[in-house]
Length: 254
Image (tube, rainbow, N blue to C red; front, side, top):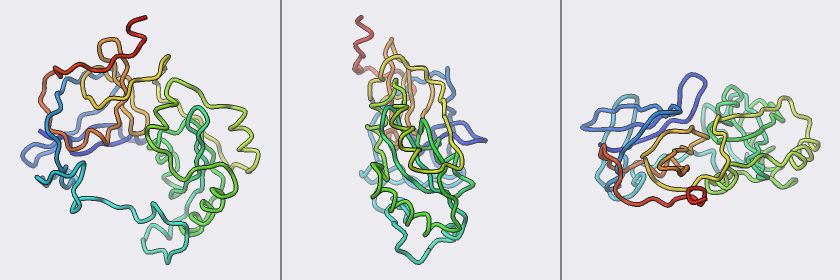
């Protein structure tokens, strides 16, 4: 059995991992309180996943080989394009997102996906600052704001992990919003209630605390672990607890 994908939280769907065996897929929800006991084995290309079908691949590249890489054309777009995708013609929102304690980014998404996109990223706070008629205008505004104020166009998972167990710097966030005229603001609660920063690990054993963006938080033997779900994709798994020792937090020994 291989982990071949993951799903982040959406309005109508809980976060989950997707497993495949002999072309058949199963979806395991990552609900708080759920228990997992898997040992990670070899890792190879996760192949192609569509609906309930999985097409395996035995290449060594992970999580996907060159044939199964999925590149999002808009990821590096700054609005200097001819709107090649149908979705470019849809109404877009430009937003600010805050990640505790003081990392801020500017981003764009189709208007109807705004809250979903923010939850996918694991944002702690957010503000909708523009609504525009298409994706090209949105990307142009995004690039402009990224030059004008201390914002990032993307935030890596390790940076987000460093803020787990902390809160947003309110004065810095308030100062940033004062430069704009937000249409709507958001505050997100992922139910983690962490008192210490989790230990970053690639593991799938323990009790689910919750999921924030694409980060799974697990409790195992008195230590809280933070697992990037993308880092699990491609692993073959066995249903038994891992035998290797995991790094423990200092809180275990206090």
